Image 1 (cartoon, one colour):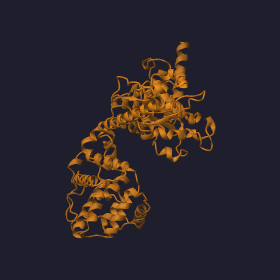
Image 2 (cartoon, one colour):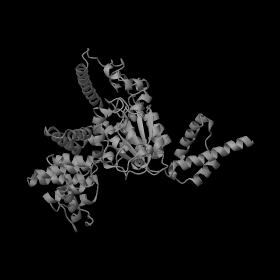
Image 3 (cartoon, rainbow, N blue to C red):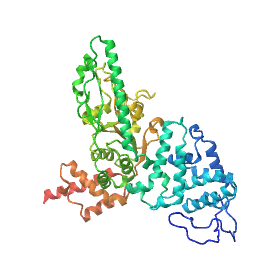
Image 4 (cartoon, rainbow, N blue to C red):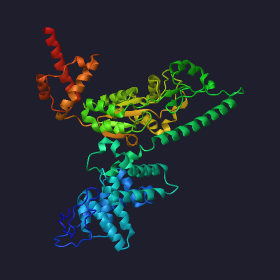
Length: 557
């Protein structure tokens, strides 16, 4: 372990400002009465150096240092702090502030170290120290109301924008998009911070939220680009289809069925067949039940006011704030409902499935539930040659919903890998495997449905999965999901949970919630003594017992 840093006296005793800690403190002051100057723990240096040495991502090696640090922060890398300590010690060993920075996350210390590195960069003609100073600022600047007036913030913003403008032309497209999202989000933090209430708490590092804000700064331009690309692809597909039909049939080529007059920005064409394809005898036999989705542009549901949705969900699930905020953040600035694939996992009884269903209901989209323990590759559809022919289940969800962006709930996803429900122990025919092509935007836009034997558009479907554990899920599947943990509620959540449980029980009985009176003092005491936190199911059962006792007493009296 490193030695505990002792206090260092300087000639300037001015207190650091609120906006820029240690900005007014004299880093150049004469250090006197120093006893046992702190030194950096060799273990920290080794950890940071080893992390850099084992980072084999070839895409990052030619990027400027500040962009590499930004990506490490964005990926939640835990070694980035130690890497910076190792870099400083390699270039300018023995700085007391480096030792303090190595053992604390204090922003004031970090910004003081950055200022000292700037001074040595000039004194020693070592510009690399200035680059590291900007990285220290990026890693340490906190969220604060006057961030825009901070010289450190403006300095980092300028450095990020300069680095963004010099990205090589041959850089990986996805990597460039991630870098751009981070840099733009960082620059927009002072302007957009007020829109995200959960970021108002003090002490949060600003860089941790840059990409979240960056993803929401241009949704309309992204949507317009997607629509333009989709229109070009559809036109190219229609032309190819006409050419194929002309080659197979000497008669005049059949044009695709016209789109619904409702087609537009908030509609989506899911299945497109031309007249020749629709004359197929087997398809004609099965088609009537799917007439509502063939050659028709289906509407995309727009999200309701997110503040109201959040208020409703937090009333019902006060212990699920992290899940609710993460899911709803996907919809900020979006014109239609589309949530990124998400797994909600936690111990049984926390209400994972109920939360997913209520999310769909509050967002006004249909919810298609799949019991993963009984599902297999038939989820991806069955060829129309067979008597059991049917489209893929997400397409069935669209047909039932009548809109193009329903929600698919995959319940107990971890149980889909067993031998029950038609799953194969050798991994063939598993639900997990057929999901992979549905969760990526590129492949879901052109999913090859075996029933229609055409590419269908599943790109607007939201996938929510629940699991008691994610340990058994294959890595390719986890890479496509955002994973959120749902903790069981504690005894402190009882007052908030009880009204929601009563409302839910009234809904199950077909009653208005006002018909069920709140619990009185004795009833509340009985519940509180029997439930100390944990499963919401158990709490619900206890409330049901109280209500049954009420009903019995009313009959007797």
